Figure (tube, rainbow, N blue to C red):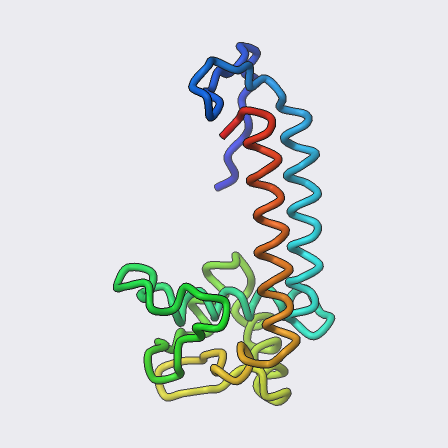
Length: 164
């Protein structure tokens, strides 16, 4: 189900770091900043997918499913180089990946099969996972740093505008 935006004409108020009320009716500026962030992240997703944006999205979905449970347990794997080992990852079915991305099962399965052949995804009895070696590769560590930097810039820009 697609949520349709509503027309909100009243300005939104937020607090700056100093606590004073700041007009946050900077929606167009926020959208421009957010659009730049989104496009930069998409470039990183495409690179993560070996040049194919759909492969990158599928890999991100698999990664998220493989490690989602770790976000709740502890913070052992929060550092840039703190990659969760394969034995703590949980495989995910291709069906779940397809459903979460809103893609057909067959399209997802074809992409996953290609990623398996390329050695970027591994098939296990209970599903697929992205192996640790993919995340410790220098190009992936660079993408992690780029994505972090891009996101920090987004947050800093939003703070400067007084909307965070």
